[in-house]
Length: 347
Image (cartoon, rainbow, N blue to C red):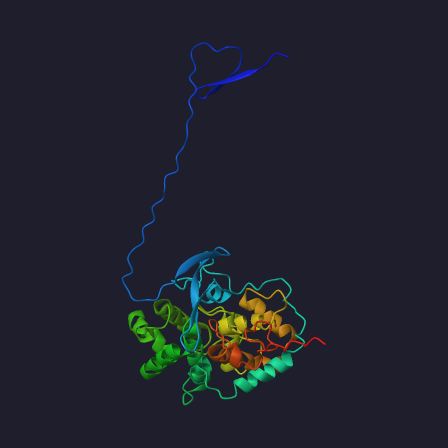
């Protein structure tokens, strides 16, 4: 069979024998041009995320978790950030904000009850009996003015929770005191301009973004809830800047409704250290909530957040946990201070 030669002249391929004229072979290459990215200088003092990461199509910052005594630990992007700090503008447009009301169709995570969970929980309650953690006196459940109308109290609890994301309890509490001194109602938040509100919130983390969220939420409460806050988790999460953790804690603290466990960075960390989320653990706060609720008696749900948050602030810290002082040091799977068993003497 005759061989078929293919030669390229310009943009035309010739098939067959010799092609008249000299054909010089040229190798062409396309060089990739480096893309130069320039950032505008930071002209304000608002706290910025350390790094950015893409998760589920949404850019979320790598954050630093904080404990009651100032320890910090860089952690990866979390569901809390994705749900609660969706966009800098606070827009509820579907193209820029996660669809909060679209609940996952998957089956909730279920795990077997840990064999020693009752003993572990009993020890944590003993260690927390002194109530000396920051959350005990300055947590979001402690910030509302109890002398005002219950509707206003609920709004103040909601605002406190909106401020609490990635912010130490002491900082949130101080900001709430400034807001209450000015007057913290739906009407006052509608009247105040964003600049003044931001100044009142500073140094709360992402205070400029949160000031936008609060004003947008106040408008929604005025238009749809007669200045009260929503009474369901789903409706609370329809507010800008409110994610699952805030919604479940708000239902507990503002409405005294036991509908779920609020899982923040402390609860998420401790539950996984104790293997309360299964052998493989969880990498998402919502999955942690599902795992805990699958085996923990419902009557314990309401106290779980404050109990574990305080435990995480004082003992089971993200960096340098005080395992040596923990009553669970010999039964905790993650303990670094287990008592060594004496070696048996050979006969």
